[in-house]
Image (cartoon, rainbow, N blue to C red; front, side, top):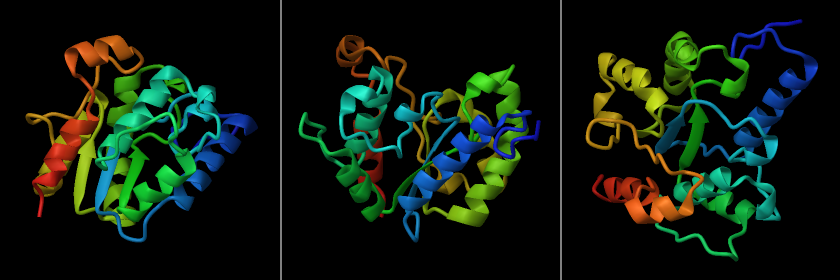
Length: 199
């Protein structure tokens, strides 16, 4: 079996095809110039849960994926409603020069050790950010991106990082609406507030 360029594992044709489809979908919503790059660790395992896979019927998404999508929508100052149209919303995300990328291009489920995979791919992810996207700002979105936060600081890009008290933005209750509401843990409004203070 060939080695997948996105995660470094031996992969079958289905794995390679899914990665290619994710890249195709993301490129269709990529702005010409990226102002704000949202940086997460790895895409979800289910194709239906991929951020750039617009769902006509949102019930096909898992609850965690739906909440994640909604938090990214909130970063634009838009409150998600039952009438939300994902394809239109993704178009608006692009229009605002926002873009989401993953450090690892394949789901963590294919990795034996998530943290080792992140450490191994952090330098190449950083190079992708520098060479392909050159964003004005970078918003890390999970604990697993901590190594990238450190690397961006080392290359002098620390001033481009938008952090939550020095750390990536994290919502420990994605997938649990009651706890998210009770603890006000959603990252969308926190990111929006941080972005609103930028020049």
